[in-house]
Length: 329
Ligand code: ADP
Ligand code: MG
Image (cartoon, rainbow, N blue to C red; front, side, top):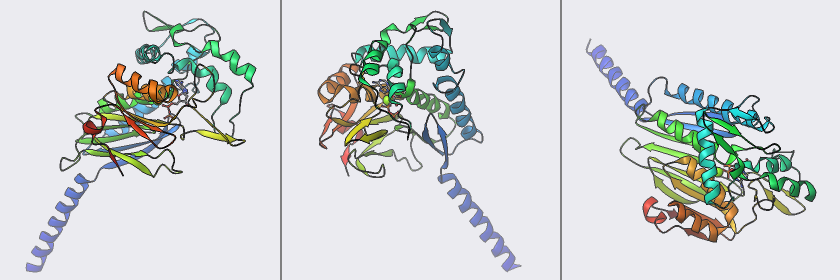
């Protein structure tokens, strides 16, 4: 009897400990969307939150991917100059894309699609376009020519096309961050280079995010760390997607002025902003602008950023270090 009571008490304690441990341990799940690995870490989520997040990713992929037939982007790209009705979300992304494009002097341009199609940075299928085809595509890259009409309608001049690769993950990170608020105690959302942290970890800790060393061969090697919460850190780099031909490194962020990879002094850029979409587009723009213009652009936009040059030098906007406790590791 005594023994049984002891066993019972032991089991209860074990169960309680188990429950506490389960509560402290986050739910982690991985998916593949938008051509990238998506990792979702949720602390204390409700029963359906994880499934709702993947359903949202699925929906946005069907809406925003240029390679999904019938997506808003696909319909815009195949309309050959006709007006297309799109979702309010797509319309809104294009409105902001146009603004950031203008603010960056065209360094960020979603109309870069004719160029990305020529280079085709799909592993094993990359190619270097001939000068004639590259130069012929340049006049087609101009976000100011995207017409946004009432009633969520969009018109793109014939021959032009759009690619939301430099901004969509940020938009989706923002939407998923809104979805998780109030439905878990904290969340770490990682959409490729777009990280969004919501709330505080159990015990009240903020999230520590590593920023990769652009020179290192592996993404596991962090050069810096920042501590953030309720905001997004987005990194763009020339090491994400590239190929090397005859000793030359060709990467996937293209300069709309030349149609060539943006060969500037920058190897990686991290922008921190509550709006991941803005940080995403801005980080891509900075890679194209190069350090001097990127710094001026970030300051004009009121954004905080860390620029890492190909030489390994780091440059920040004035408040970056203190705001986010930037440290070299
Ligand atoms: P990633 O998506 O790899 O994290 P970025 O956010 O910098 O990196 O986006 C790069 C993608 O954006 C490219 O793969 C391409 O689809 C698109 N892109 C390339 N150059 C530009 C540019 N100058 N402006 C806007 N989008 C671009
Ligand atoms: Mg981007």
